[in-house]
Structure formats: structure tokens, C-alpha cells
Image (cartoon, rainbow, N blue to C red; front, top):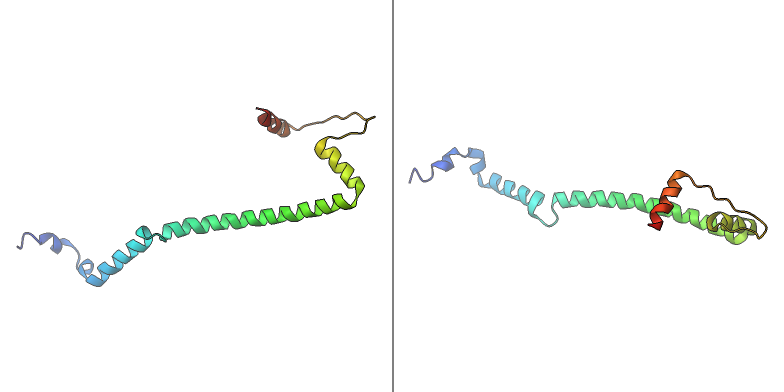
Length: 113
């Protein structure tokens, strides 16, 4: 019988205490095994932070777009300018030359593939 439980003697006394063992099991459970473990919570918090940054960006874009829409609805000169810039519209007696930067040219080439 003494030989059979000799490995228990090699375990430090503090780890043989049932309270310490319970705390260790609890910590392992909370950190690794539970569905709401700390690793998952950390990932979720990181994702939430990223989404909050995205939210701020899109809220700024919405405000900017609302301002532009208001300008287009109230002033015909702005509407004409917008149509000329965005949709390359021109008057019948005009010539239109489009000058692209290299990055814009690459974007258009990717879209056409």
C-alpha cells in the first residue's frame, strides 16, 4: 500500500490541500473551459472596440453625406458640379478630358477584370 501512493508524497503539501485544489480547478475552468471564458471575453472586447471605431467612422460619413445631400438639393450649381465630377456629364458644346492618378487607374482596371 505504501508503494502504491508514493506519487502522492511527491506532490507539494500545498497542492494536496482541498481548498487550494478547488481554487486551481475553478481558475482553470474560468480561464479555459467555460463558454464565457476569459479568452473569449478578451476577443469579444477587442471586436467590440473595433466595431465602436467603425461606428464612429460611419456616423461621420453619414453626417458628411447628409450635408452634401442638403447642398445638392438646395443649390443647382452644386448639383451641376456634382453631376460633372461624379458622372462625367458635359454640355453639348464641351469636350471632356478625364485625368486619372495611377491609383485610380489601377482601381478601374481591377473592376473591369
